[in-house]
Length: 391
Image 1: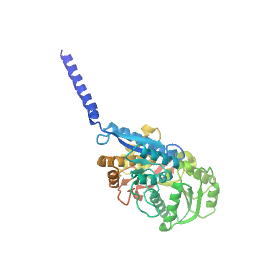
Image 2: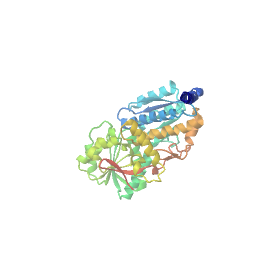
Image 3: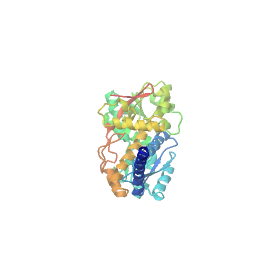
Image 4: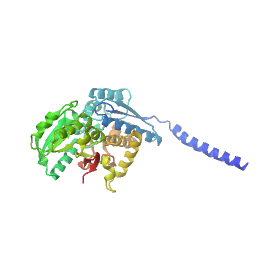
């Protein structure tokens, strides 16, 4: 009898716990907060978009497992633009007009983001981009901050400043640049040329190539004949960065090869192979998280994110998945305070302060919709197929 009573009591407690856990969710009955994302999941920038997609899906699953946002489930509607600007626009229009989302995340590239900026601005809906160009958040002619547009990657202008600081430190005063002819490469090229005089650096060669080009030996041969001490390449891995590194090695070039932050993922090392050895680049701290000092405010977050991502994705974490992490977490913080009202949501995004993310510590304002400084970057060198933090 005692055993029967004990078993009955246990069953009652278990039943009450189960009813409480499921009843809380059912009782809320709140409509989901719908957000959209357009990412370069496939195509020439898949090494950016795929980790971003995986990150967003991982975070949404975690958020909903904890009860959503103020009791509202978070619904993510995610489209692949295949790395195409026209498809980016089509997908964004669908999110705005048919899906009625509260905000949009993406895209992965500067060019595909710039293609959707006018539409998002006209619709007056917040966009948090995962692409780098400063032109995403500021009108290049008026220099006015775009009211509805935010972004999480460190800007190309900050990357250039970090590279030029490295050049000054290492007595590199003459450089050559080689850039891919698309939104990302063109923006980087413009910043390299704009900031060079400020750092007393002379650009002795300026070469460009197409995103689909398979060989850059002609451009690099022109550079080799100059007196450049370093060659700076502005591209992502699948748009020629790996080829530039390999071609430079084949031509036995002795200049220091410096890449942009666009190659801060394992895909570049895979594509460049042995030619990646010795390449230097600016990067967020994620890829060298374990090498950071114990007091670094980002270290714990970076190690936790990397562990979760790699368990889910089954491949190494990169700074690009981190950009999606920052974009969604900053948006979630704003949704908690503002709900889905577009004006209130926009205002809360702009008020983001002291947010520790994967790219840095964000402090946004009405004139700064990125909220990072060049100190969000560290300089990294590739040695024996691994990332090494340069002190």
